[in-house]
Image (cartoon, rainbow, N blue to C red; front, side, top):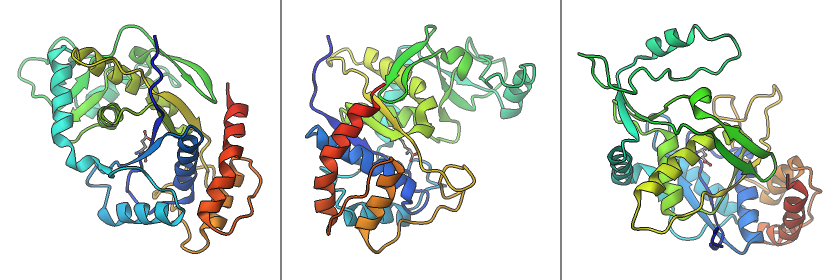
Length: 302
Ligand code: GLU
């Protein structure tokens, strides 16, 4: 029986550059959704990829959220300080025989995929699933995908059914150089912070089944704790650059302008197809936006 846990949402930006309007839209959507539910809104800085992330961007994200009165509850979770928890989670999965070491190089995986027809998903072919070839060394730890497809529901996009064996194959949780994969850390943190609702950009829709698989696997290892339901998902439309690309540091997305936060809120609001709100401060703007978001949420239900 599903339990009705209090709403806990989160915004989990990767500080690979200053906050741009696309991320502000996601932040606003997840913030308002928590506010509509009188829930909590947590902030997590996903700086696990230390080569791509930097402290200046993280600082810019925090200050920009504050300037728009998007105030999170509690302390900011910072992934680069949580290695020990990811290690413990990996150990737990390993105990359940849900991981295995893999020796395959990128080239070997590409070669195995070259037999697949164009349009077919590129997957890990399972070469090391039953043991690495003799004399080879592990380059990564992979997750053993479940045999059955993962079915899940998105608030806006409806029902999905994803057979990971044909969409991704067994995926990497940790690389040989110590790099943690997003699919592990995001789930460990969402589970640890008891997140009930994930509102994020639709560019992450495809990652959801992998994350649900890891969530279920971690849950089955935590025998002493009550089972926590997988979160509810709502993937919001993302703001695209003029050439149709996702806004990002790579596509040269500009930082959210410093002046006039109310104007910025209205800019991303209109992207959701919602009418401009007249307000003098971000706090007032957010108050006026909350009931409108509640109606928008209802209208978006698939
Ligand atoms: N850190 C991811 C990003 O900035 C978002 C992760 C998530 O919301 O699950 O794209």
